[in-house]
Length: 354
Image (cartoon, rainbow, N blue to C red; front, side, top):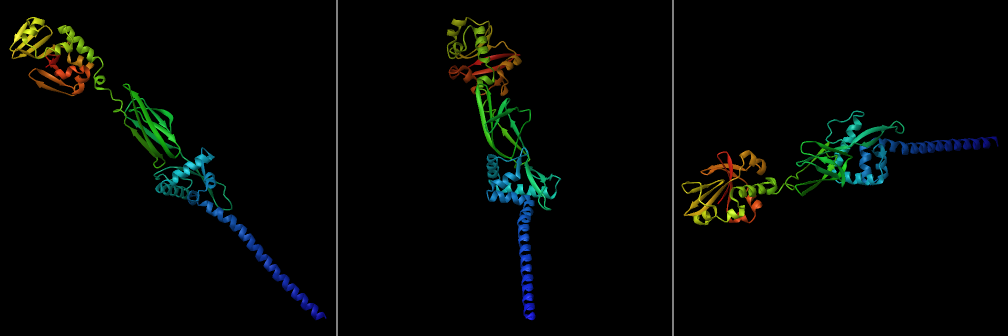
């Protein structure tokens, strides 16, 4: 009997030891599993670049919002959607960004100065266990706007941001992303417009240039001064008593008809008749051309009419060459009937009608 009890107790103790060992092993496994389930995410969370990549690949908005900060605050949903779409839209942009994150993390707290772009500033947070945790604070990007026209109004995503001029640098700061930049200017009774889509963040500084001068360039008549038409009419009227149109009508008329109106000249030089304030050239006793004194020096006329495109010397004097449309726009249909030129002679300016 005593021997049988002893065997039973031995068996019982052995079973207890086995149960204890199994319990300990189970507890160790449970503790290990719990620890690993907590340590593994913490370890993965330390690899900030890959967390960023995975959040984009899996459209994990919650992780992205916890990872990326704007103005020291977690992203709002609209900002999250916009930025996630922007990063995924260009694979090269995404790889550059991840490379920047990883480089900054390796060199933390120093910034990677050689980076092509500068989208984020890494900031360390208290991590779990012995692992570090980082968040990404968006850096504002610089947009430089250039224009060839004074007082150009600039808008970014339809919101006015200021006025740009050709001789001054105009800069705008915005967080990374895609923006529609537009320019508008009013001059000479015209409106010039242009727009361009800009990706802020692909470079450390982005530049957009608008060329609006051609859109608002003055008409030919305005370019050379609105007073030139009045000047021509006034001076021709003062010298001849007739308008430019009336004097143009004399081209091709007979010498006798012309002298019937204006009388005999004060002087004759070859085929030219000299009157007080104008001259007439005849060909076969018909009026070939008229030369009318504009009562202006070269500098005075230039101040009103603008600089000519070029000058050429001919027998009659120095011919000021303006664009072909100059007199067309000033005198309209009258110029179809004859050619008109500005002549510099003996320090004075003349209008030739021929």
